[in-house]
Length: 236
Image (cartoon, rainbow, N blue to C red; front, side, top):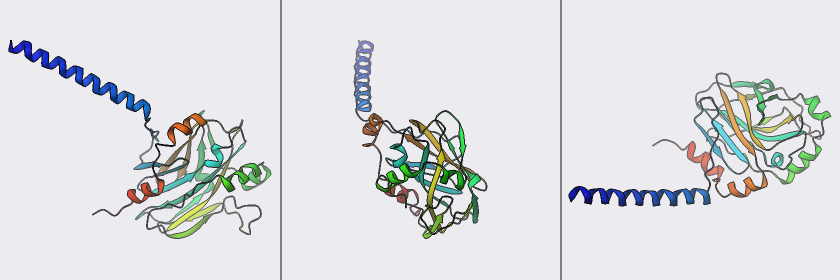
């Protein structure tokens, strides 16, 4: 009798567990989880906002914004707003344009173009779009408080001259724009910005979203500013 009662209780328990899992599955369908792609290299964290991504390891930190690019599917030129610094005890580092590349959904790696290629390209449309469709990316670790310009591609009307290098240090918050020419045009799907520091590679994932993906996922992203502050909060 005791064994029969135990079996009955076990059956009730299994039914309760199945019911709980079913509810959990339904809740998962109602509120999808934003899964961060695996970079394939050692990284501490990747943080995500709607059109902002930030990734870092023990050496370097990279943040990017790509709203204008997400609105430019089919266009030949991609524009990324980027911020770069190094962390903590990392020595100053001279970053060259050869250290930056883009990986597209089809697995191809595209190098950063020269300034002459960019200026000969049709970038006016995405530049105009970026004036109204952009997100702040001025979120850095607390120590990076000095302004620093990334001048691989200064605006044509700007007084600034193009430079093929940018000197990054742990107290400098370096901001600028990157352009990539995409053969066949920008496509939906998973992209990666690769930034090679002296001893490591930081890969920042960003996904060109369809309208349906944007509607579903936009409610799940957290505030990027808070994520950065929490990530670099002093340890007690």
